[in-house]
Structures are given as C-alpha cells and as structure tokens.
Length: 89
Image (cartoon, rainbow, N blue to C red; front, side, top):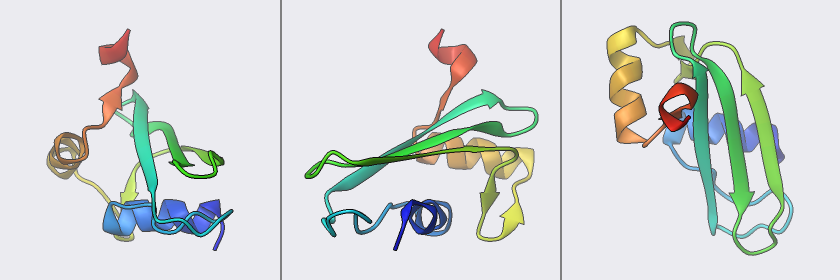
C-alpha cells in the first residue's frame, strides 16, 4: 500500500486505513477545498504513530468512482468536516 492507495481508501471508505510507512491504523486525513465550484483542493493524510504523511492535490472530487453532484458534495463536505479555504481565511 502507498499514499495513493490511502487516498483511494479515503474517497471510497472515508478512512485512510493502514499507514503505508509503518502499518499503523492510527491515521487521519483532512480535505481542503480551494474552489468548491470545480471541486479543486488537496488532501492531506498522516500517521499519528510514525508522523509520515501523504499529500495530494486534485481537480474535482471523486467518490466511489463517480463525480459528485453539488448536493452530494455538500453532504460529503459536512459529513467529513471538510474545510473550504475561503471559509478558513
């Protein structure tokens, strides 16, 4: 498993899963949306044990192999506590 696999886990299951570096399950992630109209942003994933991390930028959010509608995106954003960059500034 690598950080790309972990990102796929996040998009399909809402969890990072095992750390690709040390195998720990004590992992977490956050999304930051830089443009909610296009779904652009980045995903940070990390391990709380070994402190290694993965970072991915993306264009359009893909969940369960389909693009989200605006309604699905808003539900997903609230469910996973996704921060939009313009909200954080």
